[in-house]
Image 1: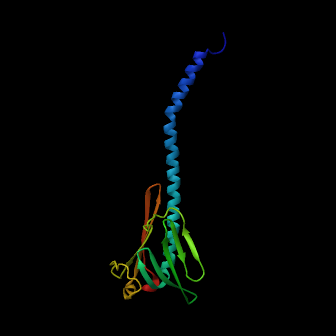
Image 2 (image 1 turned 90 degrees about the vertical axis):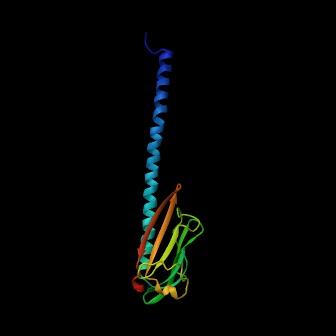
Length: 172
């Protein structure tokens, strides 16, 4: 007698089904962990790149024209001795822009910015690192010596906060 009986084949199929059912959650957990790590790596790279761009440009400003609220600030940057106003601001729920008011508006970040204008926050500080509030375009804007930037990116309900304080070279 050669071969397998139908009962033997069915027993093997049931054993394989039980083993596959037991391994599915383990495999799914591994895939979920990989996706989470990949997304976290991407958002950290995106946030770091965005912060580095803002830091580099804010360090070069010579004057704060207006600080109307915590989500926008208008600066002056000298390019070849020509004053060029520019600003960073959040628009809507996911867009972070940089505009120079003369030639272009660049989208720096188009995804993952925390909505409800909580994604980009500027905090204006004086020489002693005291919060100046939002001085608008009044005389208090002349007291600004440091600018704290807080960028919050959000993905799958998790917030990633990037924060630094920049001392513009032209405001010292």
